[in-house]
Amino acid sequence: MPKFILITGRTTGQGEALHKGKESDEYRQATGLVEMNHLDRERLASLAPQGWGEPGGGQRVRVRTAFGEAELELRESDLPEGMIFVPLGPAANALIGAETRGTGMPDSKGLEAEVEPLVTSPPKLGGIEGGIV
Image (cartoon, rainbow, N blue to C red; front, top):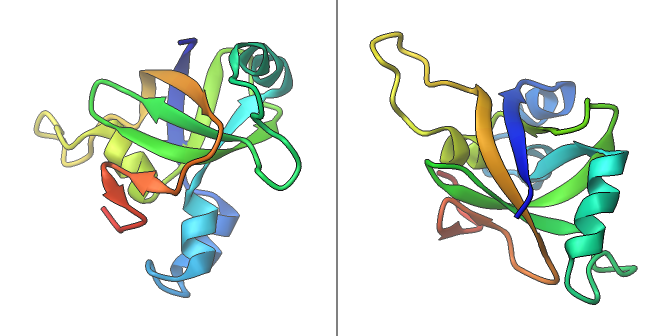
């Protein structure tokens, strides 16, 4: 699977949805995605199983790091090639791990991640189907 550099962070959508509650549909949608450069998405599409990204099915991917994995909706953005972005939330938590090395904050940027295209799949965050991690 292709390897990328993962960064996580806050977004306006994630912040607005947070005020509606972490169990709201808005929050799940705002944090259940991964952004990727257009050229990287095209390269990923060439490795995808038949039916990936067909109308109505969306483009779902599994992002995996040394700490965990999450199944997310793929969106294009103007990120540099080789980099992916996940908004802070349950999926990001599953991907960045909990070790803080005494700083109080886990590493949330610069992590190596693999991205695998999925044909169809219900949302999974850190092994908990549709739940809050």
